[in-house]
Length: 372
Image 1: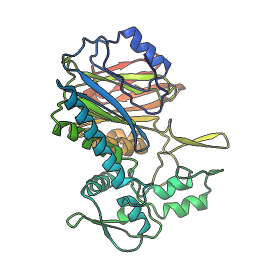
Image 2: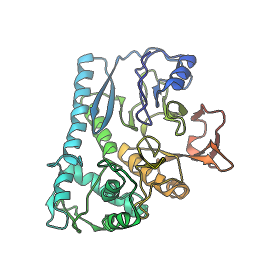
Image 3: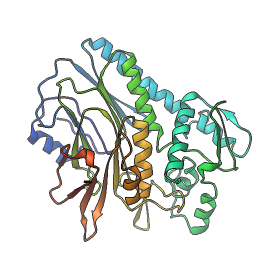
Image 4: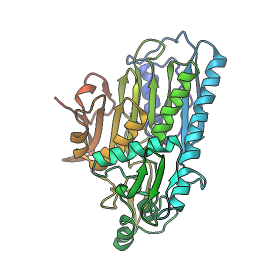
């Protein structure tokens, strides 16, 4: 079996016959996460053939799997799914000068401009989650990311004055969005939008809709840890989704048994900068300017990937308060991974009540706390 280098918190492997021994070998040798056909770790071959393809889009490997009795139909569905992701990238990429985001950032502090319906949908959700989380998710975070070297190379960490100047430009409340007319204006010169905490989730949702439109009713799409499952697996059993170990990224921490929905994991352990020997993660606190460090990772299960993506990002920034904030939300389950206070090399997994009986832990030194 071919094993790929770890680059993201969730990863899917082809639906082949895997024994428990083979699965654990994959987990130990460097696969970030995977989906297996059932929780018993053995899989009969599904009667409907599956097609799995991967394509680099939006700065990550986007994986798409489609099950359909007609192989040609599956191939067309996967092509349509990738096209949907590419369209989201064209509309919202920070690095495309003619995307909605690129044009808005150039016009910051000037006039309003119209945006595509897709960008409006993501902005509407972003502002809603920002308001609900008191700014823990803030799509105007880009000036801070630039100061920490995530947009260009820096030789040293930013100082207090640099962070103060960037923080003056970070405030979602200065994004003036006219939803009725589909126009946006950034109120202050120098403000910049960055949909990095939500756009991949929206792209995954659009890809799943493309699969449905092509007659596929069972499959999945994964974009760098933002994953959505379409229907139950063809063998009739739940999907099994692996979540990466934040302290040993070449291994899996746990697996979740799911019947559908979307999963997103946020963490500061894969994308970071090192200054004077210290790591600084890319998920920043929008009001403080420094990396969020209360939790190691946050996994959210929700009906859509966009919602899971946004909530995971916000909740990671909020830390333990994020669990309280998410508790009781309809259709949402959570996993927060922290260090054990008395033993920092051991992990504590905080799981919401709805995940009882659906979680398999692979780290024998970790502890699970489930809501009552």
